Length: 106
Image (cartoon, rainbow, N blue to C red; front, side, top):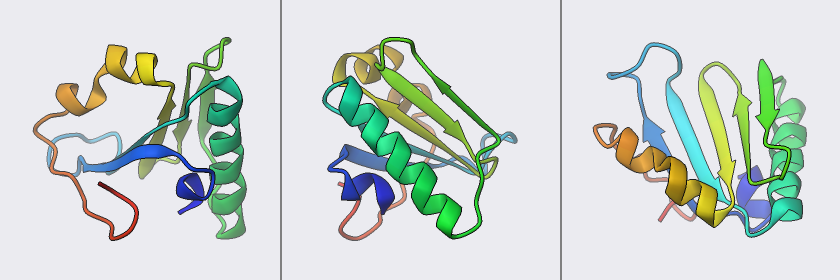
């Protein structure tokens, strides 16, 4: 996985197919500092482009605390630890089952 290649931490995938109609999956991960978040973003974007996926939209905070990458079927969220705790997507979308990906998710 492209995020894991850049040492993204605490990677989880939530299956939203039965509870949301705007996307199928969230991939949520943590970068330690702003340059780490950006490196993960760049790796995900470059990696997905190699398989023909282009983002519909990318949004980032000015401080580099978080990035959202919208690929329609999957939305990638990259957070620094404090931002991840603040937004608490795992809790907000607590009804969504986690997808286990061997060697990638915890």
